[in-house]
Amino acid sequence: MAGYVRDEVADAEIERQRALYGPLADAVRELVDATIRTTVADEEIAAATAQVEALTARLRAEQLDGPYGVRYSASGRGRPWGNPVVGLRNAMSPPVVVERESTGRAWSDFHLGAAYEGPPGLVHGGVSALILDQLLGEATGAGGKPGMTATLTLRYRRATPLGDLRAEAWIERSEGIRTWAKGQLSDAEGVTVEAEGLFILPRWARERMAEQDRQEPTPKYFE
Amino acid sequence: MAGYVRDEVADAEIERQRALYGPLADAVRELVDATIRTTVADEEIAAATAQVEALTARLRAEQLDGPYGVRYSASGRGRPWGNPVVGLRNAMSPPVVVERESTGRAWSDFHLGAAYEGPPGLVHGGVSALILDQLLGEATGAGGKPGMTATLTLRYRRATPLGDLRAEAWIERSEGIRTWAKGQLSDAEGVTVEAEGLFILPRWARERMAEQDRQEPTPKYFE
Image (cartoon, rainbow over all chains, first blue to last red; front, side, top):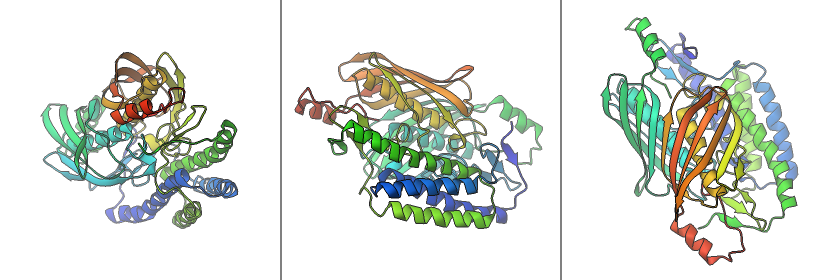
């Protein structure tokens, strides 16, 4: 399937790109927050709008025809940089920086601010679902059982406040191409949302993996 | 609960604010997309980063102390402008513009681009969950049965391509403070994701609604 691009970008070059694009996305993320919260005068808002439009035009002078896709290199390092949860270049991502264990566990500590608000002061229920879907997918990938989400169930035990949060996920069991994972979102007081999901390795990914030299790394990211 | 602020903003003033803040968020949304897709020279990226930081500082010269919350006015019009799915001022929202029927239906046609990508060329499974959670909540609110998400289950029938999509939701049944809703996400070829959820009106909202003059509108947005 197009979009999982194996390029031959060296690790040093990846670090260079990370140091270039990470700060841009960080700056845009702050701008997203300020756009929600600003109370400056109308003329300032209008002037800012014009400046953002001009800046966007400069960045669009040369750009990819479509979305970023997922790149990976010879060392097996994936770069899902457009991803809305973990993407280094996506200002919509908190970003969630995921830690992984090859036993099939993944976790992350992160902060959610104004852009993730549903009920006043609380995390939007769908944002919790978005982040947990990613974490469950990360856990299955970390355990060598990557797949796309087939079903996902969320139980909201209590409201999740905006602020510092932790998400974690783990593989429950696996049968062939099917893997069941569980996870949870927590604040300092304990669990707020529980999730469980079934992840299935799609046929196109199985075919692609079968075609390749088994020594060659395959993408771990399906979410 | 703090954050549901009834202000006395007149409809004409709301329209004026909409015409001011909508274009700023639209511009920032385009910048988010360009930040993912740009291939301009390194110096241009660095210059853009500095400009975005300067612009953000200007907007932050006066700003709300915290997140936007949900405002509503005497006419009953809610303004969940910080919401990550439907928020007029949130550049992370596509935005989804929701149509509603008082029978308890809600639907929207919208477009998802690079910022919503999970697997290459496809909508992130968690983004589908985020949008469907909002739509189910909108349907319950439209039918006079607002609530916060208690459980949400998603079935991914096939991959959802980035592009033009439709989400719709409806109330299945309601018993007191509990309302069950269903919904689906579709592309031109048909349904890609099905959702069902249980929504419960929280105690603080019931108390708040009981305290108020019944002639006075109450907020319809809990998501």
